[in-house]
Image (cartoon, rainbow, N blue to C red; front, side):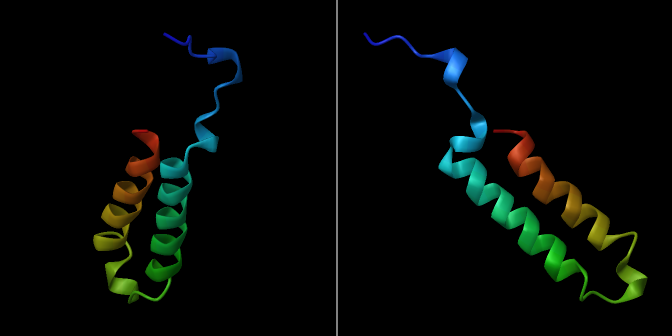
Length: 57
């Protein structure tokens, strides 16, 4: 069995992490178009949920 090289491991190189970051950027870009009354409710929840994707990888 091949040993995993932990010293050269970077999560930023994972395709799934990169896709998660694209989701975060798209969510933040979309949220800017939301009405101001949603600023502290729906937008906050969407931000936290999108960031949670990459933080859990």
